Figure 1 (cartoon, rainbow, N blue to C red):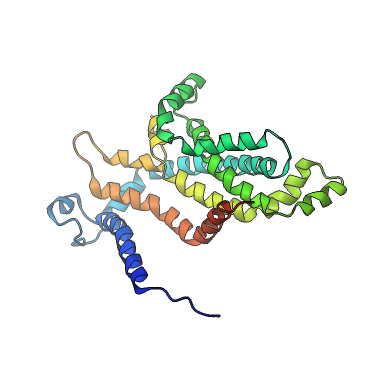
Figure 2: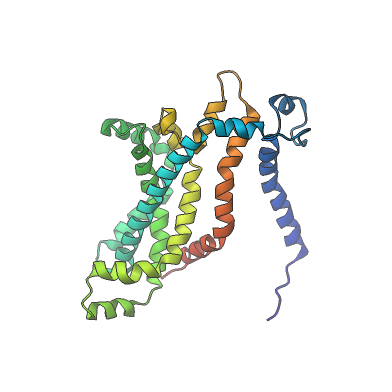
Length: 274
């Protein structure tokens, strides 16, 4: 098998891009091992004079695990609903010959063009009227709604690549559309489900704006809002905030490193026409 030659300029550009993406992460991690005084008196990119874990002890002794629990609860329920609803919708759009399916699919895809942040005020008003403001459901609803268009689009392409002969064989055996979906289609779309599950988990784990708008009490806040515990009215504990950001980002970085191949395959499948 012949090797593909890559132009040296590509390697240079890739190295430059790698450095640009690693510098913020390096700043975040190195700052988490500094003291507050050291942060303001030494150069930004300087290494800690004497690395210590006091910031990590302070974060862990506070309400960090409460934020972790809230994030796990909201993200797990949201991703489960996103994948289930999207898979069922993808089956309808890819298989069932309903005439209104195409316009409805186009309407859902139009949701990709709607800026999420312009809906903050309507969503806030809706959650207060429903009485779910400052509860996990205040976040789960918007998270699911705004994640559905892209997930439906990707999974629809996965279902279209599954041979229709399997549906015909199931129909001959007496399977209803619902049983065909749960017994045949859903297991075969597991690569797409895995890729979109990882993608949505990473995105929702780091979501800040809706969490900040739709929750008020510390007991309901998610991990991205944990930085407020270390920010006062006139000053901020920068090393502690960097520690929170490091501990928040690290699990998702690990998940993405091990799941990036599935995510890329899922996105490539979504780019293909069935």
